[in-house]
Length: 98
Image (cartoon, rainbow, N blue to C red; front, side):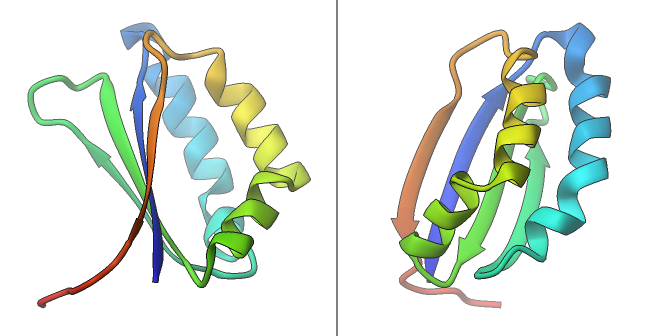
C-alpha cells in the first residue's frame, strides 16, 4: 500500500473556502482509479492546519492522479489559500492494527 500524507496550513480566513472545495471534490478524488482511501484531519491545537491521507495501489496511480485535470483543478483552488508551504510525504504502509 502506497500512502501519501500532506500537511496543509491555511490562512484562517481561507479555511471555509478550502473545506468547501474539498467537499465538492472528495468523492471524485476517492473514486479516482487506484485510490483506496481518502481522509482529512484537522489539528486540535492549530485549527488552520490540516492533513490529508490517501492510500493508493501504487505510486503510479498517485502520479496519474497528480497529472489529471481533477488534481490540477483542485490544486489551483487550494494552493492560493495557504499561509505556509505545504509538506508532503510518500510512505509505504507496513502494518495496521484495528
